[in-house]
Length: 169
Image (cartoon, rainbow, N blue to C red):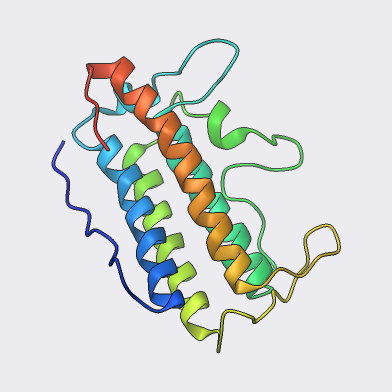
């Protein structure tokens, strides 16, 4: 794996630090998937889990959309890969899914997320749409996204090691 990530600064303002760490974790997922075939990206972890690297990419596209576009911006959008009838679709439906499409969709959702974050005046800005009645601040959303990526990047480490033995930060 070629590591193309830019290390977050050790000293920066709060918003710059949050942006840098979120981007670092976004790129970590890309690094974990680098150089694999579609078949390898579709390989599942262990039963009963349907988790795969491709599923993680699809899941994170939906998570980016949910927090930045649907909640922060208040856009009326549904899930990309999941629905009420298929709540785990991003993980379950990868057997014929296109990795190229999934990565393009994920990257596009990241760009939408960056635009939504940049449009907010400050980190205390609250989401236009609430989750379970709570309108989260942009600060909370960015911290949550860092946590979401960090957790799933741990899953990605294990999946990648299972596929070809590759490990890394």
